[in-house]
Image (tube, rainbow, N blue to C red; front, top):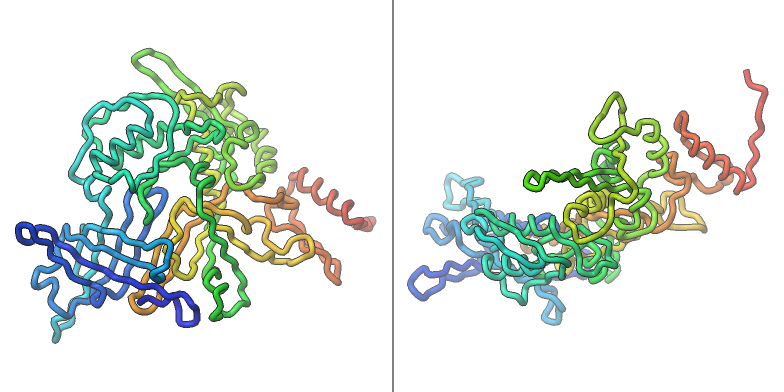
Length: 477
C-alpha cells in the first residue's frame, strides 16, 4: 500500500510484477518485485510515443546474481485506490538498462538502477516501416499502431483526419512514422481550425489527436493553491497544490523568433520547380490558435508597437534587432494543402509554451496528458473584483505527467501544464507587470512605464481617469 502522505486520506495499492516469457518452452517466470523496490518514477507526455519507468531496486536476495532480472524482461506496474476505483493503472514496461549504483561490502545487497520503456519505443528499435501508404493520415496511423506496433484497437483513440495523402516510408521506425503523420494531419472536423496533432501514449491507451479534440473530450481536474493552508485529513486536501514553479517565459525577441506572432514557411518543389509561401500573423489568425481562453498571456500590443519600426521582408535581417516576416493577407488559407498548415501549428505550440507552470500534487493516477487542469491560484492582492490571479489562474492543458512513488511511504504526481490564453483580460498589459495594487488606506499605486511606451502611458492615464484620481503637477526644477 502507498500512502500519498501521513496526513491525508489518500491511499493507494501498488504492485510490481516481473515476467520473463519462455524461460522454459511454454512457461512464463513471474514473481513480485514490490518488496525490492525503493523508489520509482513513471513518465508520460504529449511529446512521448512511449511511457518511461525509472526505478531503484535494493537487491538483498541475489536477484541479479542469480540472473532473475535481465534486459528485455517485462515489469508490470499496478496502481489503484480501492476495488471501486473507476480506473486502475496497469502498464507493462520492458527493461532496457540495468546499472549497479552501489554494493555494500560485507553483504550481498546491491542497489540497482533500472530503466524501462513501453512497447512502442522498444519495438521501434528493431522494426522499421519500409513501404508506401495512401489514405487519410488517421487511417495510416492505425496501420502503424496495429500492424507494426501490435497495439490492440481497443487501446487506440485516433481522431479522423481530412483528405488523402501518400506517405513513403524508407526504413523508418514506427514512432518516427507517427511523428511524420502528425505533421501532415488536419482534423476532419474543420470547425476545430486546428492543425496541431500529437501521437502519444498514456496510462489509458494510445492517442492520435489534435489539441482541440483533446480539450473537447478531456477529463477536468480542479486543484487549488493556498500558501497558508496546512495539511488536513479532509478530502479537500487531496486537491491541494503542494509545489508551484513557473519557468521564465520567452522574452520579446524569442516570441518573434519562435513564430508565436508571425512566421512564414517557404516550400521548394524541385520536381515541379514551384515555390509555395505560406504565412501566419497573430493579429489576423489568433482565433485559429487560442485554445484555452480569449486573451493572449503575453503583451501582444506592446510587442507589435515595438516591432513596427523593424519590419523587414523574407529572411533578411539587415540591422534590425527584431524581425517580422511580411506576407500577403490571403497567403494563409485553411485547406487540406499540408504546406499551409505548418505556420499555424508552429504558432499554436509556441503560444502554449509561453505560459507554462509545473506543479506537484498528491498522487493521482487518473490524470493523463491531454486532460484539463483548472488551477485556482489566489491573487497577490485580493479584492472584491477578483480573488484569483488574472494571469496564472485558469485552465491548463496537461502536457506531461510524472508519478513519483516511494514504495510504502509517499506518492506524488508532478504535472507540466500549458495554456495559450488568459480567461480574463489583464489590466495595464503594456507595463508587463502584475495588475496594479487595489486602493489601500495609503492610496498606494504602482506602475512601471517603459520609456517610449505610449500605450503604457495611455493605460496609466485611463486608470487614473476611471478611478477619479488627480495628480497635482508641480512647477518642477
